[in-house]
Image 1 (cartoon, rainbow, N blue to C red):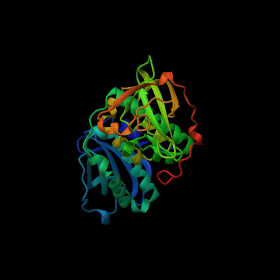
Image 2 (image 1 turned 60 degrees about the vertical axis):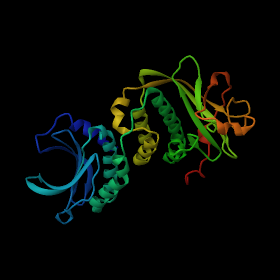
Image 3 (image 1 turned 180 degrees about the vertical axis):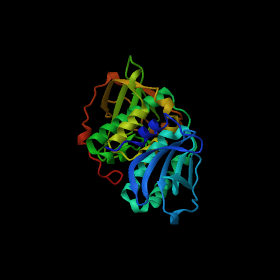
Image 4 (image 1 turned 120 degrees about the horizontal axis):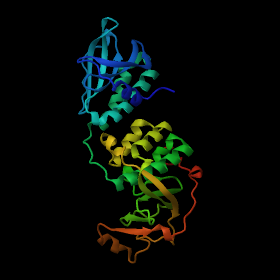
Length: 330
């Protein structure tokens, strides 16, 4: 198994090079012009060095708030050799750059004779994430909610493979967190260890989709230094084969910025329990189906209410049996 760029960069950063030099390590990937290197410069900036031919050296019309990309000749084996130098200039995005580095190496490995083209096309796909304005820091309650959604996603991916990422539709603006062919799943989380009370927002969040069932999957969590953080759960999903860029794009829609991952790693939760509930006629909710006349809901704004799930009977839901081939082209 190929070592991740993240672990290589951590190793290289333990000892910095002299000014104007790089500390490098063979990435294990070769292109037509030689070995591609992981590198860290004298300022600790993470870098990918892609060897080029003299005919490929030129001007790159590409820039970002957090990336530097340039052609430069470097001394290699006692002679100057041309390289494409891709570097992260914002250490807050180091973990995101490590994922980008993995993607660049994968692309070069697939097209070793077209290393420059593979690198630039990969960068073009990742451009938006590095150019987007930084999001604010999420609080503990928001992180607990995101961890709950990622935990459900992990179960779906474990059962159905990386394609299950397409079912996570909450970050895309859907009123339900997960949308499948036969049902939707709304995920809730509470950090109150005394009860399973969750908050519902608006009159449509618990409105079942047409011709499909709706379930609420709720997690009861407690803050714990021995628990799991959101960045760790993201790592688990990547290890299961979920696409790096696709997952980061979803997280961006969920207001999660990788720039704050160092802070988020210290905020951990341990699960006390998690259960699924079917939203049927016995489930307490405020929707157009339960309010008479339903038009009154149009006159209410900022509607939110709490539901005590501990008073309800849970419903076992086997995610391995769920079908979603009709969703997102799966």
